[in-house]
Length: 299
Image (cartoon, rainbow, N blue to C red; front, side, top):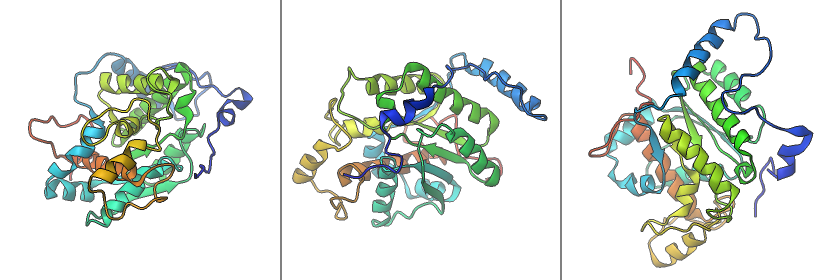
């Protein structure tokens, strides 16, 4: 089985007293000269976002993968044209990109503006700093995604809140960018485990504040028929069973999908296209356009 470049063991993120401040807690330091306006705008945003919002968010999950076949060609074309994405991850997160490339073989060319950055993940203390560096150097970027390795299997509530706080801060600093929240991959601990609690904490926040959430764990939790596997891992035991009794992609090769079965990667690729099409303006029948989108002014 493959291991991440970051290896993501628990001790890697606990040493040296690694700990984030709780949600909404401002760091106690003097801001650099010229940053007062940004901080003022951030403070106003924090007050506004603390209250529930009724705008529509977007949750991308196993039902999104199922709905891929309903996306019209116009929706896929709009996503391909408008997406300028930066996706940063290690091996678990590569499942999503592997799935997109499996779909390339079926004729669904990747958006030319989709940058895959296999380098680091949300276990990096400075992921938000790296994001600012990228966005400042690539102002055309309109979508940012970071994936987890295994950190949500042991993180505390305050550490999860720190992730949400950093995401919220970036949204305020870069209002023209869609920031995609993510849950962590399944680890077999089931509904009573730390991972489940942390994933639910992220889901609740995204629902409450109309965020865009790519529910990595949910896609692994359900087969296409909707059967729920609460104690599954991201190895996706049900994937093998499914492919033994159903038609799976012809390019579904063992070993191509990091840590998992290739059908798991494929499903995440389908869900990613659904997300991009929705953000580019397509809505299914009866659907509501998400509050955040790639429909930038002038496009």
